[in-house]
Length: 112
Image (cartoon, rainbow, N blue to C red; front, side, top):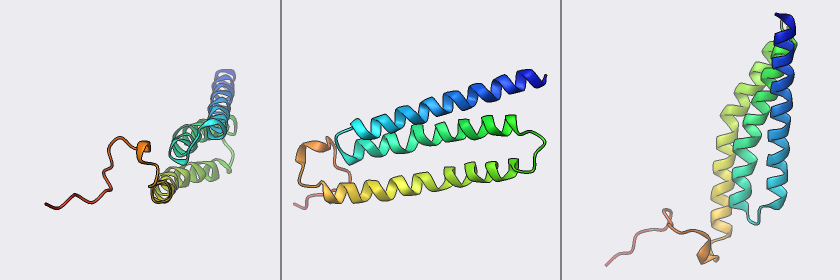
């Protein structure tokens, strides 16, 4: 049973690392902030959670597991807030690029 948990933990850490690596490559390759924001939040957070879950499986029975769980919870709570703040700033800074957004939901409605 211990060997199975070690294999699952190592697999989770490896897959999470690869997911975080692809997110980092996407951040470098995407052309604008709004697209980079997507790569910086979703795959990066999922990759971190996978790495933390793998570490919890590897460190079972250790006191440090609770610290890893807290790191995962705080990441899940703060990543959407940071992404929302970055998205709002990017929207304000890139308003002169008219073709960037197909539908502009933040634009005030036109008055007749």
